[in-house]
Length: 94
Image (cartoon, rainbow, N blue to C red; front, side):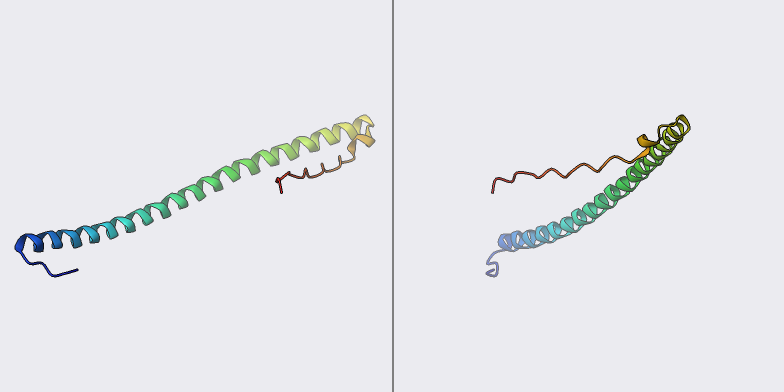
């Protein structure tokens, strides 16, 4: 940048560099806020995963109760686990 030739240009130039500095400061603040957002989203995922694990445990208990009832009723063939479903191939258009 060329040096200012007047006081008015000098004041404008100083204003430009201060504004550029403030923009850099705001970018740092934005980055910090984005990190905080990511941390909170991760915490939310952990909380939700804990709830899902609890539901899975409850479902496992229900399966156990049903299996015991079937065993006590004499339906041993029903105790065999069903086969896993096949994966469905996705059409990608290629």
